[in-house]
Image (cartoon, rainbow, N blue to C red; front, side, top):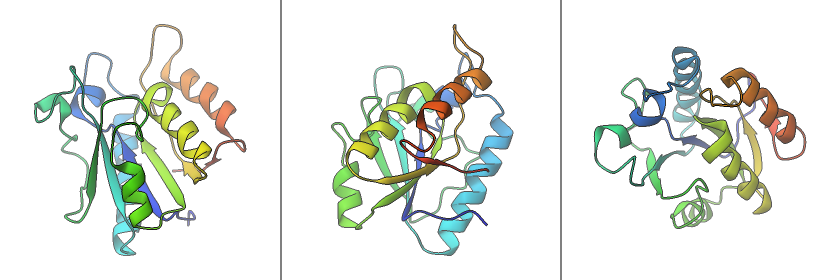
Length: 165
């Protein structure tokens, strides 16, 4: 059994990111892992927060902005809309975490090199204990596997604890 944090933070598992021009690598496996973690948090009545990027390309409430339908979104989940790669910037995330007295986060989601990397580093600087399983899409410089390995090499034991899905 994987240790759990105070809260599960699910970042950018939206149609426009996961099913866009460059789909998320290993999408089916990612969704299975995230849904399994959602079930653990749901069964224990621990908070689950979905972060949705909201900008000119992922504009609420359009299809691209919506969460992928394969996610098992609990009725009591909470939502944060972020206009930037930093999930804390100009959003209610830190206030929400403070209200719930959250000190540790399990992060999962899409696009390692954008919102996840920025959020990991900002959350770390704010004092949160972090753990995660990551995924991404390929980019013009690296495959998804190379990108994940690159960032996990930076994060491991410095910013967060990597967990197996």
